[in-house]
Length: 468
Image (cartoon, rainbow, N blue to C red; front, side, top):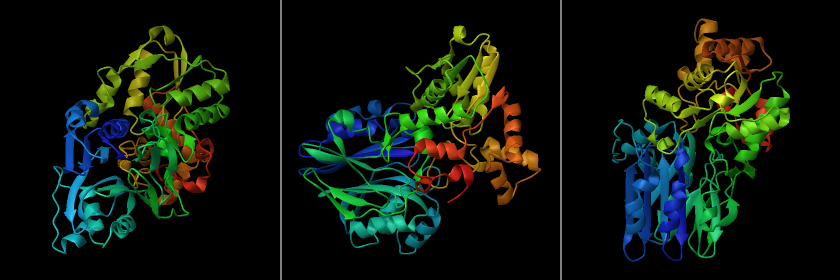
């Protein structure tokens, strides 16, 4: 995943840029960068690896040394960015959020016109560099950005920093958000709506699907009006979004509370306490507890002073071990108790199985699991979500293969996605058995969409039902 932040200020913008970008640290763990433009000194750029240290630590020097009135920054799980580009448009910097599925096809077409790309360490082409190449194929930034978004199969939101201002473009179907903040001496553009609040900005507008604007410190202009069709990622509310964020006017915390509330309405177990897997499961659990009347408690806590998310290694076995080591039990609240535990989702199942075993070892009598979203059946093809990875790593698909004796067709998968079907229940029973839960009940997709409350036609639910 990833997030970005851009600032146009009458005076120096680097303080706002530094902290606005840092407020996106929950969205990425590998690379981060900032690029600024100063009327006297031109462009400056810095990119650092943040796998073993947080953004603020790695960019402390730049926060003091960089200067400019215009700037963009990003935090990413993948490519190094922002990148600086020199073309017939002049010099500019660009950063992106999204996923391009046809990157090789586009690259081959562009390479055919005698353009080259630098490969990243994993041998792939930097997505943001490819976007810059697509922008450069057109005569102006507006046409170039629109061409890039129309050509890319997947999703693509963009910030472009030029000497005259910053272009901000939301994905053509609004799969990821872009919001604009305003204060007396400038404007900002942000993935997360909360990122600018403590910097003195107020909400100005949320870009619609495909909308493109350009802004400087004095004004903002709409260059391309928003489209009518939206498919914003529902998983942003469930897991990736920070609790204080809002998308389409719906706060993450409120949506998660609604999830727990609707989960409780359909449940028939009577545990001693309700708990959430920290941190994203907490609000779901509070909603469940308040609706059911069963006490909310914290039978374990996450140790975060020296174990930030950005420390997590890329090797999955090590991630699982560290995730387990971060959880510290509170034995007085576990021993002899029947617990109902809410997590945002079940992906591979490894961490939640280990969490359950850790609760049993700490004296729990029962552990009932309630994921706050439906079973993940399809790997996300629109965003680079590490949570919904390749399909055969999903525990649901592994269990379905066991039950079906091989890889099923689409019609069979549709049955497993139906919460009222016999196959769905068999899948749940098998997952429950494999992960050693006392019981398992997922949030239903219809309830999940009600939890958001903006209309199912505006929500992307591909990872749960495979529908475009």
